Amino acid sequence: MLQSSLFTKTRKEAPKDEVSKNADLLIRAGFIHKEMAGVYSYLPLGFRVLEKIANIVREEMNAIGGQEVSLTALQDKNVWEITGRWNDEIIDVWFKTNLKAGGELGLAPTHEEPFTSLMKNFIRSYRDLPLYTYQFQTKFRNEIRAKSGILRGREFLMKDLYSFSKNEEEHTIFYEKMSKVYHDFFEKVGLGEHTYFTLASGGSFSKYSHEFQTVTSAGEDTIFVCEKCKMAVNKEVREKQKMCPHCKNEDLTEKTSIEVGNIFNLGTRFSDTLDLTYLDDKGKPQPVFMGSYGIGIGRVMGTIVEVLADEKGIVWPKSVAPFLVHLISVGESEEVKTASQEIYDALNAQKVEVLFDDRDARAGEKFADSDLIGIPYRIVISEKTLAEKSAEIKVRATGKTEMRPLADLKKDAIAVLDVF
Ligand code: ATP
Ligand code: MG
Image (cartoon, rainbow, N blue to C red; front, side, top):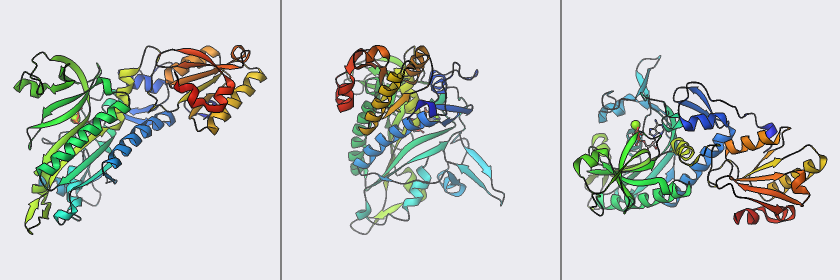
C-alpha cells in the first residue's frame, strides 16, 4: 500500500480527554478514531491488526473443532428473563431500548442465553454431542469507567465460544484443550511472556474458572503471581487461599494486570433454566453440560500496544502487524524514486505486506511516523544506500540496523529479513 494514498494521517496529539497510552498512540498513528468515550472506530491500519488477531483466533478455534457462526446483537428480553439476567442488578451493563411497536429489547453484552436457546433447535441425542460453536461479535456494555481506550470499550469485538458436552468429564477434556490453545494464542500474538494463567472464582456453578491476565500498569485487575509455576491467582481467590494452587508456594508477587481472555465452566446453569437437554443412550433426557470461552480482540490489540510500545511509539509483533515492512524512500532524486519503486514492486510480487512511504516529506518526519506506527521492519532507500547498491534495514523492536544488497531483497526479501 502507498502511504500517500492512505487517508489517515499521523498527528502530534491525541484528543485532549484521552488518558490511556493505547488510545493515545493508536489515535496519533491513525489506527483508530474516537467517536466518544469508550467507543472507537477502526481505520485501515487498525482494522488490519484487528483482523490479523481475529484470524489467529479463528485458526485456533477451527483447529479444535469450533464451528463459526454469527448471532444477533439485538436480544429478546424473554430469553434473558428466564435465566434471571434481564435484571439490571444481575447484569449491570445492559443497553436496553424500547421498540416503536411496543416491547423492549437489549444489545448483547454476552451470548450464553441466545446460544443455549439456539441449540434447543439442534441438539437431540447424545450423538449430537459434544459440539463447539463460536463467533466474533460486537458486544455492548454500559461500562461505568471507559478511560482505558480500547481495553474497555462500551462497544467491542469479542470472540466467544460455547461448548456443549454430555457431562462434566467430556467438558473437562475440552476445557483443558482450550486452556492450551489460549496459551498458544497469547504466545503467537507476542503476549506470552507477560500473560499468566490465573485461577479465578467460578461464579454460580463450579468452584473455579480461569482467566488469562496480562501484566500491565494499564490494567484494572490485581493478580498474585507464582514465579516458579508461571501461574497466578486473582484477588478473590487470594482472599480464600494464600498459596500457589500448583506448588503451594506462599511467596506470591502482587501485580497489576488486565484480563485478556477467560475460560468458564458453566455447568448446567443455562441448560437447566432454558431447558436444553439431550437423550442419553438409554433414551433418558439429560441436561447439556456447557462451557464458555472469551477473548477480547480489541482488548488484546490494546494490550499489545500497552505492553510492547516504547518511547517512540508502537511496536507490533510480526504476527499481528498491519504490514511486515515499512519501505521508506529518502530524497527526491529520480534514482531514489526508481529504486524504491522497484523494491516496492518486488516485495509485492513476493507477497510481502508492505507500506511504502512515497510521500514528499522530510526524512526525519518519515522516520518519526514510522517509529510511531510500529511496523516490524523498516527498509530505507536513499542516495547514500544506493551508492552501495543497498538498502538499510532496521528492526523496530530492537533498533538493530544493517545494510543489505538490493539484489538480495529483490530475490527473496523474507530470507533477508528472517536473519534479523
Ligand atoms: P473485566 O473484568 O475486565 O470487565 P469481564 O469479566 O467483564 O472483564 P468477560 O465478560 O469474561 O469479561 O468477557 C470476555 C472477554 O472480553 C474478557 O476476557 C476481555 O478480554 C473482553 N472484554 C470484557 N469487557 C470488555 C470491554 N469493556 N472492552 C473490551 N474488551 C472487553
Ligand atoms: Mg466486565
